[in-house]
Length: 345
Ligand code: DOR
Ligand code: ZN
Image (cartoon, rainbow, N blue to C red):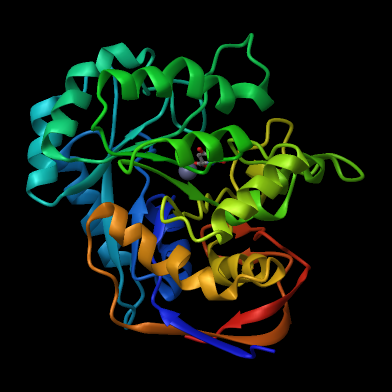
């Protein structure tokens, strides 16, 4: 039985680090495990310009605890009025690694998001031309579409037509939750990839209603039926370079989750690697873990792999019921559960 695993240091290709006191409280959890992370721009107000991204990057770097080596990779929040020249210049100058499409109203701080993708056709063409990747929150938001169908409908109504219009656009279909998304990404060209979160590998939609309403199992896109979870596990562990790690760790204070209108988001960064590795072990695929966590992401983004390594050890430990990060009390993913792997460093 494997008792220790050493792999190249991974990166997180999708994370919410927030700002201010919350940023200071959470960034160490990501920086401890990951060398780099694609940082989501859905602050309030959102990070829409290269100037704002530069300033946000400086605040993140300043908040990283001493002795930790961590590089934030910034994203531009696309709006109906995004300036193609600012996006491309920001990308060329190394401020932006990618841009992020939030359909308006899809999730936390997405009110300034794009109301119709045709509004940003010019920006997307400019991005394709420059080789700038597009990260997509892939859900339609019409009230008439069932919340569990929003991703599958997005593929048909938005993503397929988009890639027909701009076939060379580099797309990361983020935090995929369905078999339809897995199949779509598998069949698409090499310019299309997807990230997968730990929660969508561990839980199906029952988790939100287990014995009562469970706000800490609620994130967007919501977890789906079991058959989708199984398709995601196969995709993540199957060695296909189009699928790689993106935690979507999204901290909200306990009281903002445990509320009559609880926020969407699962805080998984404190034990992210342990959570993913458990899945790879259960699937008999520990040998594929390094590729998923540390190689396929950089390959898709055209970045070098990390030279340092990290080690995980087989060691039972209980995940705390909550974590005080100063700014807030956060309930981590797997709270109260026993994990069988522990990140050593
Ligand atoms: O669950 C989520 N939380 N999904 C998102 O897309 C946004 C995130 C957040 O910012 O809290
Ligand atoms: Zn997210």
